Structures are given as C-alpha cells and as structure tokens.
Length: 148
Image (cartoon, rainbow, N blue to C red; front, side):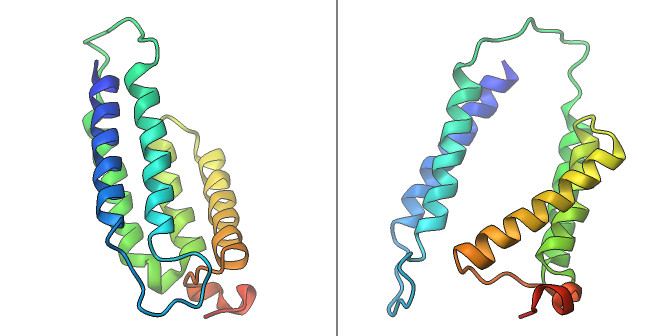
C-alpha cells in the first residue's frame, strides 16, 4: 500500500513539475534545447516511475518489517549535503558522496554503493556536460575534468 501511495505522490509531483515548467522561457536562447526541456524530462521519468509503483503487482504486506523512516531520513540528509557541496566539490564528487549513504540506506554494501556513486557521477557528468552541453561544476576535480 505504501508503494501505491508513493507512486501516486510521485505522479502528482510529476504533473506539478510539468505544469510549472511550461512557464520557463528564455528571452535569448543560444541552445537548441530550452530551459523547460530538463524539468519536463525529469517529470516524464518521475511520472513513469510513479505509475509503475502505483500499478505494479503488490507483495504480501508485512506490517512488522516496514521501516522507511531511517532510510528516508538518510536519503533526505544525503540530498541536503549534496546541495551544500555541489558547487564546492563539484558534481562528480558530490554525487559520489551522495550515492554512498543512499545506497547503504537501501541495503547496499559499502564498496558497490561507492562504485555506483562514482559511475553515476562520472556518467551523468559526461552525459550532461559534454553531450547536452549543460554546464556542471567541476569543483576540486577541475584539473582533471577541464574545469569551469
């Protein structure tokens, strides 16, 4: 039941994001993709994930095992730390540091969680910065990544 509620909340958030992104306009755009493309892309991914959570076949409920609060608090704390360190450390290191507690809060082992964070940070950096030309901070890795 909690998955279905979370799925519906994610779907509502996605609809809100898409509605708010409709007003994003750049007076002068030098890029083929405008400022509303990425919020709309995120809203689409969130909507698909929310619908999947809401309609997937349910598992047998076990009320004694449900412990989302510590994991949820860990993820929220990791997101706050990510936001605080984003400019200083850069996208790759901040993402790596965020992925470790998030992976651990979902039962991941430390080394695979860290490896996933490194892969996620580097992969998303090269996808957005090099392919989509979205400028991301390089932080302390500017000497390796060609810093901005």
